Length: 377
Image (cartoon, rainbow, N blue to C red):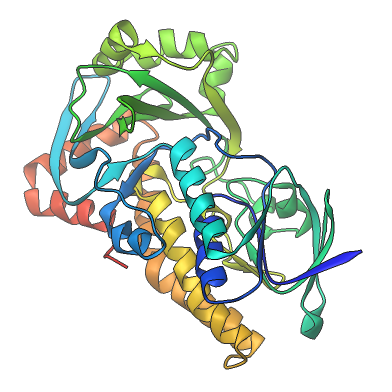
């Protein structure tokens, strides 16, 4: 039996769930397909720009009670630092809490959530819409949104071009996340600490916890014997800030979460007729901040253009063109800045003069900070 909906959303993360809330509230039959369940932890920096606050209120999620973050600190293993105020700032919320809250918003709006359901393939049938094969049966829909995150079997099935390219700076990263308790970190601060082969972010989330999430090159992890423990002890702790954290903090996971094979290469916002949201459309380097906010904003863009298509005021070819243009207009500059900063963070030899320049030229430092935050939506 084939089940039919107007909107099929692959992936129940930030972008997929917030898009589901919008489409369902507008009266469109909407289904979300998520391979896991809620609540769950995910590898993520867990800092959300305040540009997202009006949108979150619109779909029914309040953020005033969460840790508010207004300052930034960057450090190197050599002890060099860069401090800045964040004019827009943000707040901290774990993916464990955030995804579950968004799932609740989507269901209250009327969306149907199929959890523990893997999407195996999706086919573009042209004017007939889409057919999707899942571990829970066959589904059809008029509009398909891809929100499957950093990496998926669907990237391979759809033969996405970024998989055929290689880039020494943008490919081969590993993401590792802890939750910790650490009294010496101010609530209003997000810090980024560089170490050989990567960088580590730390900021507060709910329940008196901090998210400690770092990106490391795969080759650096291999040199540490593919041991996260050895990597943290012998490489990360060369940074004095990180050494203090590992000495004094309480680590709350039995073992850290990890994801490998992360690529920051350019991706297309539309592939085989599927509108891609969040990381599926382009994985933003954490140095340009706000991947979570960009995921939310991409959902709003998809709703604006997708609802016009479903209401038959926009043709499908126009939908794909207009969505791509809107995505590029909103995010392309931030993605460019993120990739540029990613290259600078590849080594302390490049990072050190960059910090010196930014400390010496305040207006340039302010411009870089502004480029990592969007405007309210």
